[in-house]
Length: 433
Image (cartoon, rainbow, N blue to C red; front, side, top):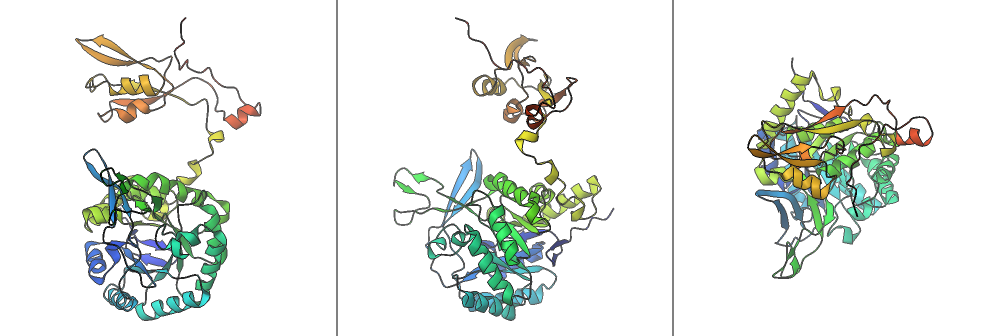
């Protein structure tokens, strides 16, 4: 079965769903051309706008054990290269790679005539396939009334999108900030303004850490620091939550989404697409590993789709959205219990410590065959999953469904008297005086 990875975001077609996000990897012709040669389907050029000056110390990282850069913080601003140079190089890229998607990311002051000028000039001088309006940058530009300062106010989002749509003849993508409580409000405003799609998430406002010798944030500039934008694998759960909220919102139905945030593998991309995204954008993973990671991304996604019987991206796009429900709609009579495979257990006891001190005291240590093994107290296990999450041996601890004969009932149904709860496990130890 032939698998077609072609992506279509609001009429912008690319050979696969993997785009480079607007960031340092898309700052020059040489970078974008090299990326397209490696197999990337599209690129959003590093944001163009009014001239800025960057500091030299720009990035800070979060490591986890031996794994470097699970999170990246940056205080870099938009491109510091002349607008003329950017437009010239974008035109050359589009000429030499006509089948790849090339998107111009824009950020200028909130004046109608300024937006009109940059939109008309950029398209006229580059032939780009679309615009991405940067309403998300949380540092530097927001202090100037741009970036997140726009994205956090729905009325501003709508107004600027309307200005852009007055003169744009190509699709417009609105890039939204995660530095809000509910992203559906600015997304709805952008839709009212006429946006053709949204992209999310932009970076999260953060301080990545403190240098305890200098007593200054990292990265530091001459002994001082500033809040910056946080990205990388650690932000993926936050991105998935925001994306799913927009995909499930009745007022946003039909609005295409470009997913961004912590995407490093084909599986990450598949999750975003399953939650409604038409394509994905990648930044930190490229800054860490280089452009060639796209080869594994394309191969991995194609192989998985073939195994699942999906011929095109739209076959599974959005299929996971209906399963995301409010807590009150979950089945309270769905019971699961931990099962430990003694043959693969290495006796590290990490699961026991985690359950005993941090969960429900549902595991016990028992001597067996000359060694001490962990056993499940079946009458106390609530199936919280913690033991399986801390176990270092894949597949050693699994969660198995317990048949209790009780019909499905949600909290909402139970409160309305429409269903009874099955007897619950005694998931605590009583204290004897």
